[in-house]
Image 1: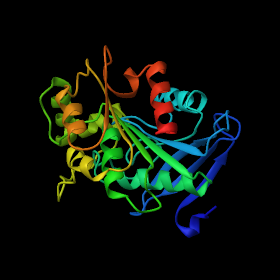
Image 2: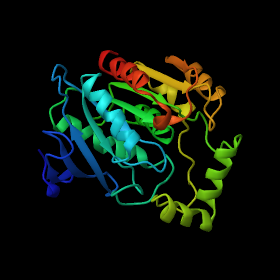
Image 3: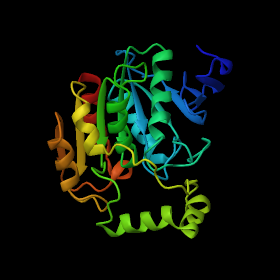
Amino acid sequence: MSSEGEGRFHMVDVSLITPGSRRAMLRTDDDVRIEAVYEPSPASVTDTAVVVAHGFTGSADRPAVRRAARVFAERGAAAVITFSFRGHGASGGLSTLGDREVLDLTAAVRWARELGHARVATVGFSMGGSVVLRHAALARGTDGRADAVAAVSAPARWYYRGTAPMRRLHWMVTRPTGRLVGRYGLRTRIDSRTWDPVPLSPVEAVPLIAPTPLLIVHGDRDAYFPLDHPRMLAGAGEAELWLERGMGHAENAADEELLARVGNWLTRA
């Protein structure tokens, strides 16, 4: 296990949330500190760890993220790592809305491998879904790679403003007043700088992911991204597509039955 001086992560607490769990501060390749929580599987029948990437304004300790972690551990029979993206929770830095967050996910995947897991799967929700797709394309062939990927409620393309919730989100991230609302109302610290260059989009990332198994999950009542987004993603490469009847958006809308199916897919894909 690396020490803080060796640059990968620093253990700050142990035995949190469940017996055997660990809380750590990870250090990304661009030197941002990322809070993360490791929880072993109670089943202990697999060498797989599932790394969970939350949506925008989420964190490792949000109830919906904790629920997903519990289901993946108990019913998916996998160890689970949750973490807070930069600008969220107790992590440092500022949110870049899915760009440099790839480095946060890479740090969490590397931690899973440091803890002895031979196989690491990633699952992301909304913004986290875009991150797991981009990470799967960009981290191929490295120790931060994913062995299976599931993107839930992910956008296919950047700058989408076709729904009222996305227009409100764009107001929040592009206006000084909106960023104040994000910081003090939603506990999310947003970088004011525009992307330069514009990062690889999720739909551009998908063709680069194969042969890594890829699952796209989307609800038919998603108020943020309509069904052309998952269909565009699934059509861009080799992917399994689940369109869930009656489901809304991201981790808050994913019930335990769906989470169990996703967890089983991640451990078996």
